[in-house]
Length: 518
Ligand code: KIV
Ligand code: ZN
Image 1 (cartoon, rainbow, N blue to C red):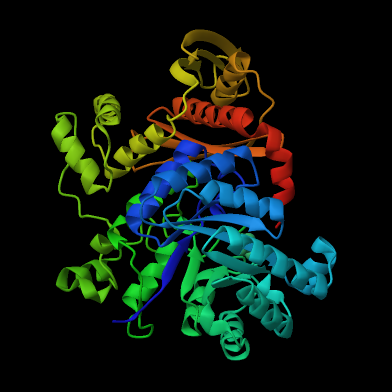
Image 2: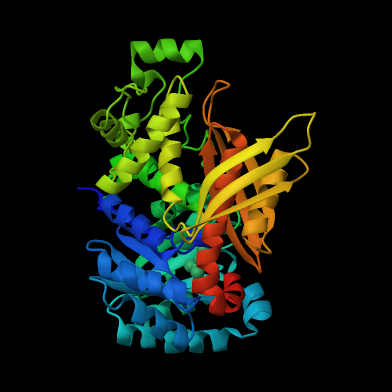
């Protein structure tokens, strides 16, 4: 049997640190349940000191998740560690993940501490964490740019103080694979008690090297990989879980390791994360992009027909993409629709199914052909309907070059119908002004993006919107065959997300901003 690589998913913590990717508690729980089903070994559920919302989400996930270990992040501060422990102590298998920066630039400018002071803090905080929790992970933040001799001392001390997992992050995505691998090799050879800990990689993608770096670290002794679904994460993101897992699976000849990941659940988890965060996956993204298994060039198609191995190094089924057997149209019934959802990797409860099926029927009346992408867009819309304080009811707009652009809009706000009309510089502007007449807000539109979901002039348009208010960013999506209606839905979905943030996270948000730079 090959050696196991532990998969530590940090979509809910480092992934959520992407501007606009914030999620509410229900959404985090839903993602955690999918991660558990995917069989990730550890779910880093959040940064409990960062906000009450984070604390609550980590606590709920700890109570609900039955298989994966639940980790809570903490700086090298007693208060952070106590808060992390309080949030994870009900987990079947809890882990405190604590960290401090060890690179000269971070110690001097961010922490204003000497090496000796950092060592003192490691001893104090790791032993405190270990007194509370049976499993402690310690990270040397900016490990990739730290002095190697100092790293040896910090790691030896962290292990002596009770850490059993040592994570060496390339926090700023700066190292090259050969260099990053070398750090692991040296640590393995030069830290006397290293056999008492599991080495872990944590890489960022600023130079597009995150996955390559993680693989290089595994080659040199790392047995835990920290990664996120779709490579979500700070700045250019973290190493993508799906790419690491499939690389290990496909290239067993080079890398004799295995993971316990249920690879058939990759696509549906990727789609859920994309739907919840509003971060669209680029079509050519490895493993989970819509084109990842598409063959268009004639020569490729010919090869594929003769033997799929000519152009496919893994099968779409392995990652949960099943070849479509069912063609959907306006005559399709609920049973066939549910089968199609299963084929696409979704399992939907009865209530939601009825609602999505109703919207599928409406769409089928408007559109001749229903593609899988249309159905995925319906599910995305449903995901965004979780907190619907504001609901879209109807919209009528004057567009074109003759009359002035005017929008007449009806919304339902907390169960009450409200109407508004407004003019604007184009139909979308008029619509957004009409929404603003009803929902007074100071949010700024930071991103407005529209794409056709499929080919054809009757295609649905999917609109992505990012709003920012007082340093809080939310991203959301909406789709419809009418692009102005899709825009209104996306805007309303984003406002609903912002309302949740306002009520649940406002008191702690400023503190959170301070923490974000860690
Ligand atoms: O990138 C990083 O260094 C981190 C640590 C907190 C592990 O995310
Ligand atoms: Zn990170």
